[in-house]
Figure (cartoon, helix red, strand yellow):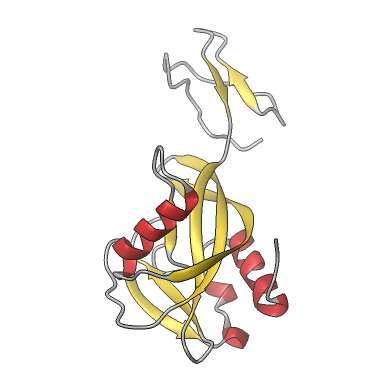
Length: 171
């Protein structure tokens, strides 16, 4: 099991979670917590030359690494709405005809907590001006054969993207 918390979020006492458990119970206060994935979404966006858009992460975790545009799904938000919001916040764009590709899980170490994420991956086309903002330091279009896998922020998502680029389908 991934160590999500070292201390009970309810009473602050040290935790001793069982290995391979999907939840923990605090032996001091009885707090019960299911360990689940945090939903995220992202998009492989291609320009008119068939190159894919990658964004350089501005913030931790993985600042300076390449990623696809996207991010966390907010409370009471569906995946498509979240992706539309993230693309607007990060790049100032609205992508048309996004198609669901598949999903992957990854670890997201932030501050002293390791979050487990599940990313819904979409593909689409992009044209027009890009305005990097929010969590994006810069952006670059890559030829599909030169996908920056060694400097990609999240390994499992990177594998899913590679699979898509080679097969053009995943689901």
